[in-house]
Length: 328
Image (cartoon, rainbow, N blue to C red):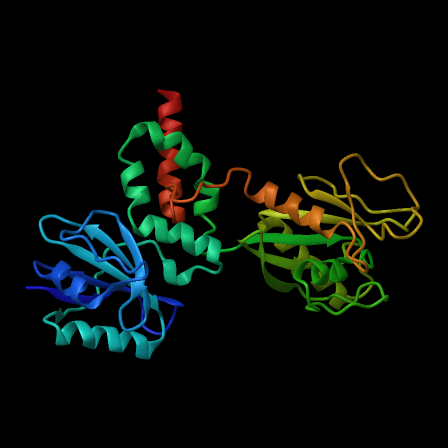
């Protein structure tokens, strides 16, 4: 018997994955699929090979198993009607519908960026499963575990500093659009405003927080308390200094990226070593800041097709195994 099953939640992601499995799977796929290069598919399925082409729509075809029976995945546009047409097409050509496979899979449909979707797709095709079998790969997998923890959930980056340092303007400059309200009045930001951005293809949630100072009224004090809670939970803090303030407020600990804003104005103090000069109003220095953020978040980046522990749970297990090997 040959079956067709939908492996991804219907109507959620940009990509849907159908699985064709059984003795006639390859014959049926060869009958329906047209490779984009105009060549025919091989007579027999080749494990882990992929092809781009059309099957009533543009799709990617991937062979995930050859024995005991062929298993082929069809990666297509995630629209409900597209999925229904493909399912009906396979059923009309001899496949029997079955409930979706519930095996743990790389959550491609939850990816927020093309870069992370590509990494998850590599894992769906078996990159991690193959690599983890060889103990020699464990150190490299452990080095890539920070990436694996954030293929779905974005890194949390908090923009912090004194009131009126330009934090909201900086968030808007990084995001490329006006997300936070900008005002010359100190203490305008009372809540935490979050903005999702993709920095060099990596998903990042920027948090614009209230200026940190001794508040004079309860509403601002609540905003400052909330800001401090976000600081405690952040993957990275960007601490903003007002370059025109002769009495800047410096962070009291941690390892933030120091940024001096208003570099287009005469400086009121000597910038600390390593601080990044920017102008949130003109955009000067923003690219250098983004590069610094990316380097801190992703010091080790996977190569195309490389294995990555693609969930927080897998990252924990790989790191634990790497620690065990180091201690043995």
